[in-house]
Length: 302
Image 1 (tube, one colour):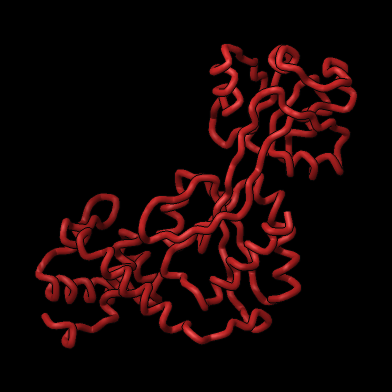
Image 2 (cartoon, helix red, strand yellow):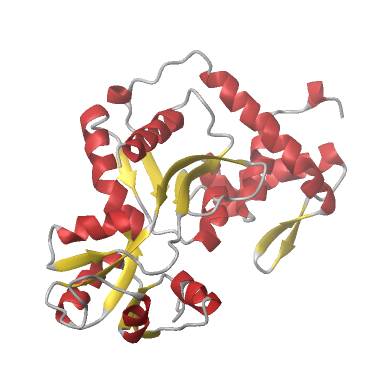
């Protein structure tokens, strides 16, 4: 079939099915019924001369041909989306939309109050939704439109994504201000490994980058407790003799509210470069790009 005879709206249906792998969710994302999606899929099959998607217990799975054409269809839709926004100037004060930004505990503490402040001043009708997102599910949540963007410490691979670097973070150690096991002069390596540690980890793990670094030095530490949230760490630290390694900016933020000491690490520091990642289709000139620039502006102020 020549493209002149193809209803281009069918490409949006293809992309929705490919993204969601479910006819009902695809229809919801497009604002049409599941039977309408089924009829569109039949027309797509006739146009491409292929089943494109086959039913499986989990939903719909793309055929080999669907996988081959998906990238081209997504690129065409992305280019069309960009073309629609060329020359348009976003007026933040007129925006009445919801932005979904994937973050984690650390990023929520560090960035969300600043982002919320900017949004409330410049775009008071914008709604901000910030679900907790682990690195392993970022791609799924972006592809399924559960989030518009995410802040991650590892870049997301794939031609359908774009990203920008935001800021770099390093680590320090914190201890309770009254912890007598920590010398007034600070921590040397022997003291650091002799003390019991609190580990903040989003995974169910008893090891982190500190343990890997110590192992390379022929040393080890004892992790006495592991928790998933940075915000809980200082309450534990001030009431025990544990010490905790955590991001430097978070340590200084928590120091305002808790009686803790911030100490340099006696090991080689670990630096994380955080990125903002989003689907390429949410290109320049859109309200999405305005929101991304607000996040970048907050990051520059850190």
